[in-house]
Image: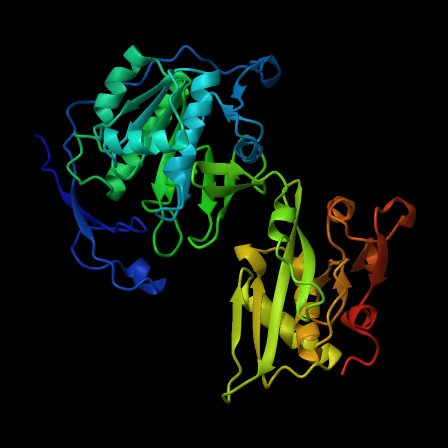
Length: 459
């Protein structure tokens, strides 16, 4: 006797499933508010499943040979850097970002580059009409013969025509708008996103097609749909940036074929995205000279050192509770560093409003910028500028000690190429002075750093 198909109620944000209607308890506990569970009807099985026959058998690891040419350069250097040298044949790449950030523009430029080097490329647009995509292509100057455009939302229809088209690269824009007609749930639901992602993964691996997926981002900044989608794909890239800034950062958060710390920097212009080959110079282009509260630090993103400007503004609090506003850095870490500055160096900030920002809309997450944040706040409070040709590096502990950072020589070489002459670094990092490209001064505590850059008797 065939069992009746039962309904399940699923959360569209976290994937929580329940046999009863209501709201998601996991999202409520996580602080996301009341999220309504959506009904999804299970499709009854049409017969016993048969195991899929395969010709592959277990083999010794030493007998497995790597094929040359599996990695194809996209022709966009910043994207190739993030991918690890190019797109891998049969890989599944997910690109997420805020609406309007430039995901479709980037992938259309990628499609043009791949259509020249490895045609044909199939671009499946499930959100925009063919005329809309054509307008964007004309604006970007794209007219490649090897680029095929198809406006289709039925993933089963796309799969049926892959044998006829035989693309070497497939772009699906977006994973939330395609659907499988065998499933009763609506496009964009947890079931549809999960099953469509699994179907595309099977196609990419089985046919050796490099596949790119566009994923929408929720208000919390996470990829919409189930988290299993991130575990399913080979590479997850986030396209970051602010609408009022021209720069965009492509950051890898997962990559089975390369480093997860690499970033690519682009500038959005009238004719699309342009690579920024020297992002440090780009971020420091409008740096003020001899301004109190401005400090230059070096953030290491994978193998690339990135020089950014940290700015701090300290002003007397107008109300009883002082404000702490942070842009581009971790709020909790900045609060800890301000407490260390007051306790260990005697800089009274308990009655001061403190505003910390990474200039240009950048972002700094690594501990090597700790000393720069501390010095920027102290410089603004004392109204004493830090010399413009000085680079500051160091992690700050709770006892006021300055700890060593990784990749010191790489950071200093980048600073020397941009005209910096001196650097204040952790004393434990200095082992061979003769090989460093800058004049360095080692400091062991926050007090030593304040004396070195702001003068003795920092009151």
